[in-house]
Amino acid sequence: MRTNLDFSPFYRSSIGFDRIFDLLENANLNAENWPPYDIIRLGEDAYRIAVLVAGFAEDELTITHEANMLVVNGAKSENGEVQYLHQGLALRPFARRFELADHVIVERAKLEDGLLVIDLKKEIPEEMKPRRIPIKSERTKPASKQIEGNNAA
Image (cartoon, rainbow, N blue to C red; front, side, top):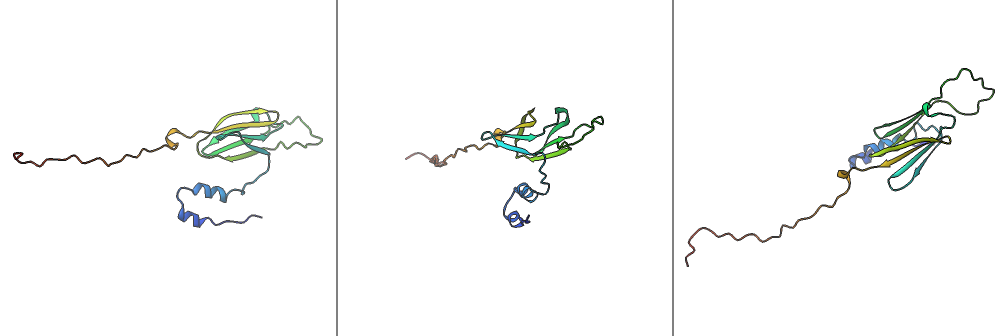
């Protein structure tokens, strides 16, 4: 059972979080369960997605990295010569979408033992990493100025 949450109070008091609220609102709208997949955290900034694609060849799979989105498509080529007596393998076309955080890149993808393995890494640019800002003190004594005039005493 799905309940719709109202995020409008958060919109009034937050700036720049629109994308997060959109993700929460659309979380389960297109929740298809095929093909099955795993998401694995390999380290602090390293991830792996493993999609079960048994029966698909490399040329029948495509991976597209769009802005904050990774799309895995599979389409089995038609073979009219095959006559199935029983077809238990789900070789139907699919499109699996994964929302990616900012600055997540795809390092590599490989097909092994019926699994499509995609390695991801979060690379934050240097200019966006936290940096320490030095604080300068303005407590220097003002230079004493002599007012123009006679210095004769």
